[in-house]
Length: 158
Image 1 (cartoon, rainbow, N blue to C red):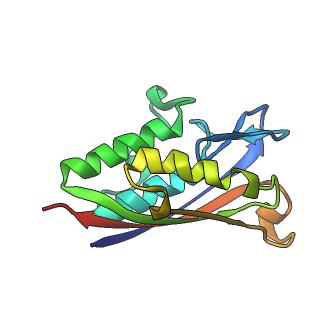
Image 2 (cartoon, rainbow, N blue to C red; image 1 turned 45 degrees about the vertical axis):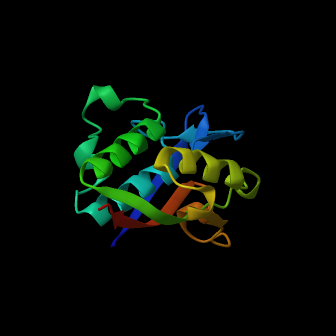
């Protein structure tokens, strides 16, 4: 087994849409990012890549490459999972924490889990997503953006 952790944060800005965990969330702004700005998927990719000892998302999908401009981050996640499979690794489980004062994430968490489950090739119970606020402290508390922490357990196949 191999364990990895990931972190990402994006600031709010622009028209959107706001995409978190592959879900489009009705909110007044989107994220400032080269891709779709899905902070959850980015943190998860980093956790998976870290567990495999393969660096980080910026190494594999650099923001200097026009091919990744406005890309759906779930496409990147599926590429990471394919990369793991080529190395005889699969996802055991993931645990993710969103940090956002706004918008409310609770109504979207089940659908996020289903999206990630499909992309990771695991059952929904192996994908845990939770959300918290910072009680008004820091950039997330001031509603300037969203942060996300992710942990991943990989299993070797064979």
